[in-house]
Amino acid sequence: MFENMTETQARSEILKYVGEYCDKYHKKEGFKEGQRIPYASRVYDKAEMINLVDSSLEFWLTSGRYTDEFEKKLAEYLGVKYCSLVNSGSSANLNAFMALTSPLLGERSVNRGDEVITVAAGFPTTATPIIQYGAVPVFVDVTIPQYNIDVSMLEKAVSDKTKAVMVAHTLGNPFNLKAVKEFCDKYNLWLIEDNCDALGSKYMLDGKEMFTGTVGDIGTSSFYPPHHMTMGEGGAVYTNNPLLNKIIRSLRDWGRDCSCPSGVDNFCGHRFDRQYGELPLGYDHKYVYSHFGYNLKATDLQAAVGCAQLEKFPSFVERRKHNFNRLKNALKGVDDKLILPEPCENSDPSWFGFLITCKNGTDRNEVVSYIEAKGVQTRMLFAGNLIKHPCFDQMRKSGEGYRVIGSLPNTDRIMKDTFWVGVYPGMDDEMIDYMAKVICEAVSK
Image (tube, rainbow, N blue to C red; front, side):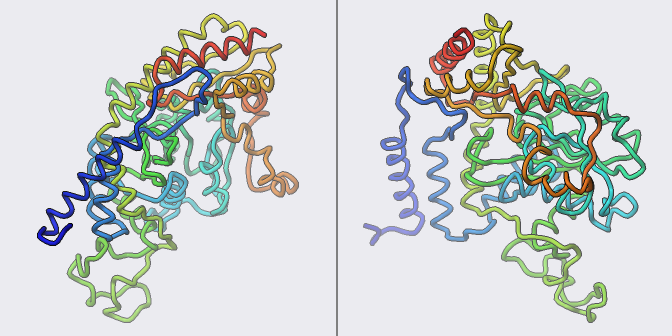
């Protein structure tokens, strides 16, 4: 078939057939009542599949041209200077936190035993890097119906050991960035925004509308299939701080001191003529390590999918907002039995999901069981209360390794009474209306 073709012609022909294949065999059928509605799903077309195959034909596999393109375009979208692609949102959080432990930060570096303010109502990998390093998470409560950090607890949580705040924007709803940023500025604390569930959300700060993830010192994203956009597995770490970017890149790439891109040697022009640490003069800079790092890079195949997703992303955000508003309007008739979610003041959320808390007398387990039986997938607010989980058994028994401010009453209520359903951009109005009908039935039984 390719006998008389150049490589460019052959690739073009292959990609033409890939597009036709996707159009024929990956086309979604319309919704039928009773059909299962997942809380999230991939939304894609032939553009993603063509990019994926295009990258595979090069067989570069590790980070390459699509990675460079994705990092550049995501940075442009967010309005930040630096963006680093990594292999997951959890790795993004690990990379972001560990950057704060770098000796290059001097007195501001986070050391073992230092404290980081966060919340227990959320996904565990916001807190995991803190614990694994040997720093101390300080858990404060959240608010309902915003489900974000209770900023009134911040002053009670701070101590002379506090070095940072690391907290997530819950299911797309920005936390009170004004209050948290002012608090961090007051005490000279780092701020990491876990933006994994909130890509595309905006917050009005001092008269300027900004994307979440760009207000603090470092922001993180996840591109796992249920999230706002996907590349299968994948994540990103972004910042406007050149020193933090240097550290983030080093930690992502094995902890090396060298800044050469993959496949490039002697980018700095000083590969064999400098001294580092106690190494011999002229030791190969490509194998000099300034941090205890990892290999957290994504593949170019993932980045290729991400580049196509990023083109669609603004429309994803608008559809999420539409679906959220339609569902909320449809559920207003049962707000005597359910607490419906509210956006944070001064925010414009890119909703990841629709959080619901059952009021007194309405049993969450019964409601969720009914909804699931009708084909609507539900989820808890992740860990509910993280410190109640088996991973905390040893620390609970010893009474060491973390601090709790107050009794976390809202966090415990979320653990017992809260669930959520999806609003992902693949949902049409029929699906939203069916979900609303089923939820109303569940609480009216």
